[in-house]
Amino acid sequence: MSRLQFLLVNFFGWFLVIELLGILALNLIDNAAISLSPSTISSTALVILFLVAILGSALFTRHFLRRRARQGIR
Image 1: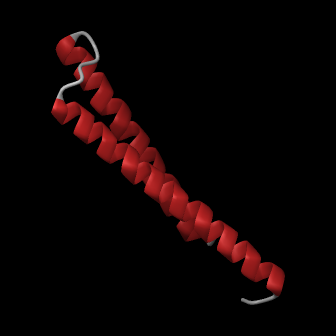
Image 2: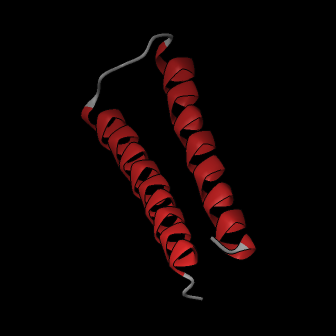
């Protein structure tokens, strides 16, 4: 994984974690409890889905590049 890819994955990963925490914090402030309203569930699920997709892509890319490096392919 190149340095730029690593920085982008870290940036988007932290961005999504902060966004998820923000959604949960705003929900907690508004309702004084964690609500299970459809809009909260869908937005939280969407953020988690993006987080899993980005981290999965990063792991796949790292694994693929390491395998290519072991084979001597640049």
